[in-house]
Amino acid sequence: MVLSLLHLDFYQAFRYNPFLFILLIAGFFYLIFMAIYYLKKRVFILPSIQSWIILIVLLLVYAVMRNMDAFIYLIPTEV
Image (cartoon, rainbow, N blue to C red; front, side):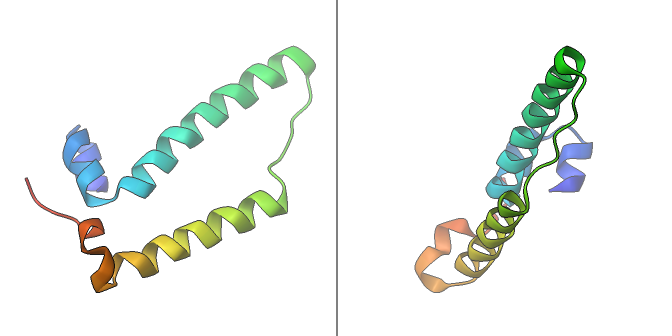
């Protein structure tokens, strides 16, 4: 996925790992939102530990599901 992103092949990057691709986009918007919030309020807010735990659990569930036969559509494919 990283190589596809470096080559600006976003479609293939999404096909390799859609969860991480969406997570990168969400993280980008989160950083923009936090930068605007900091510029307005001069307060920097760190993500809570619950947010990190939820994120890690989602990543682990996705990784396990991706390797199960019932979720074969999550396997990365080539164009």
